[in-house]
Length: 117
Image (tube, rainbow, N blue to C red; front, side, top):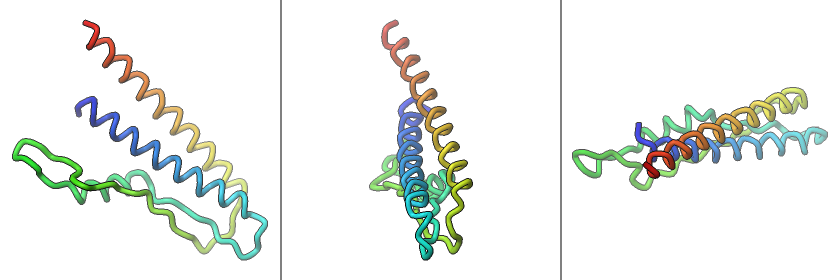
């Protein structure tokens, strides 16, 4: 995988995590509303799979995401909000975001080192 592809995937994951954190925050904010049903997001793997399904060859040597901008699907569930579950999910999002940021930083440093030499 080339470096630009890694940055693209990291960017998509950051967008996915942002949408997921928003859904979690909404669940927590509305936990005391009796009729509120929890929201969930599709997994990042599902989001990428939806993007892969729309790949088109633009050249015999290249593949691209021609016009494809996969969105993380947010859907409503039939379950009530459990604050403990939402806090665990929020912690997972933070861990994933920290990992994502670390990987991007490492590749950025490597890229800068190759450009300097």
